[in-house]
Image 1 (cartoon, rainbow, N blue to C red):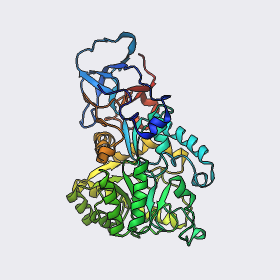
Image 2: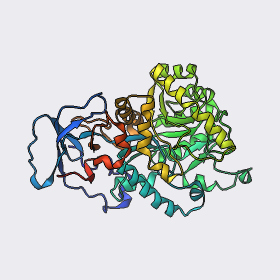
Image 3: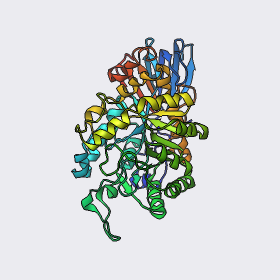
Image 4: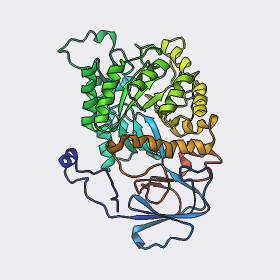
Length: 450
C-alpha cells in the first residue's frame, strides 16, 4: 500500500534535518464517491453512474456496484448525485513564486514577504482545481517542501529552480548599469535568490544546471531565445550556442532528466533540438518545417493560448514589449493548427507572471482552448497528456505514481465537478463549480453533502 504522503516525506538529508514535526505518518483514511460519472482523463464521454473507493492516496476500486463502507468512522462518503469525477488539472508551465506579485515587488521586496505571498498563490492554484504544476522558473524548492510536508496547502510542484540564461538573455534581470561584470563581482540578487542563473560558456552552464539539480530540480529550464517581457533581447534572437545547450542536456541526462527551453522562433528551436532538448515551451512563431522536425523526433511542445485579449499582459502601447507581444500572439492560431496537423505531442500551460488578477483566470485560460480543440481534447491535454510530460523527469520526479487519470492504482488527485465539463467546459473556469478537490487522497474542499 502506498502511504498517504507517498514521495513527499522521503528520507533526504533535508527532511532529516527538519526533524519529526511534519514527518509523522497519518492513519490511512478512505473516501467513497457514490453515484458519479467519470471523465477518466482519456475518453471522449463520461462513464455510466459509478462508485469510486480511495484508500490512503490511491484509487483502489472503481465499480458500477455499490462499494461497502468497511472502515466506518474513518470513511468519508460523498454522494456525487451524478456529478463528474475527473483527474486534478495540471498546469505544465507555471511560476508559483512570481504569478501574483508585480515584477517591482519581486525586485525590491523582502524575500520573506514574497514567500508568504507565494504560499497564498499556491493555495489559490489548488483551490482552482490545479493539483499539479510544472514550475519553470523561480525559487520554489522551499515552497514545494512546505506543501509536501503539509505546512501549507498547494499543488504538487515539479520545480526547475532558476531559469538559466545567457548574458542579455530572457532570464537576465540586470540592467545596463549592472554591466560589465568583473570576475570577482558578486552575482545579481535575482541569481542569488534563485530566480535566474546567468551563464556564458559551457563551464558556466554546467555549473548552473548542476546547482539546480543539487537543490532538487526535476527538470532544467533554459532561455534559448528572445522574450516578450524582457527588455534587452529582441524576439528574433537565438540564445546560447548549440554547444552550451548541449552541455545543459548532458548534465540533465546524467541525472536522468531533461531540458526544456523558452523559445519562439524556428532558429532557436532547431538549435535546441540539435543539442538534444526534449521540450519546447512557447513556439508561437514556428514554421511548418520546424514543427515537422518536432513531430519526427517526438519533441514535446508546451504551448500557452497567448492571444491579444483580456488575458494578455498590458504593456504600454508603442513600447518594444508591446510590439513583441503582438508579433507573438499573432502566431498562436497558426502554431496550434500546425501542432494539430503534424500530431506533435502537445502540452498546455498558462505562464502567468506578475499579475494577481490574471492568476485567478487559470481555469478560464484552459477553457478558451476550445477555440482550437474539442472539450474532451482540452481536458485530456490538461490531465493525462500533461501528466505524461511530467513523467519525463523519470527518477527526478518528486512524486511516484500515475497522475492525470481516474483508474485503479492511480494517485488520488480528483475533482468533483457540478455538471458535465465535456458538454460545458466553462464549468472549470469557475472554481465554485468544483464541489470536491482532493489531492493525494486528502480532501481540501467539500461543499457537497457527505
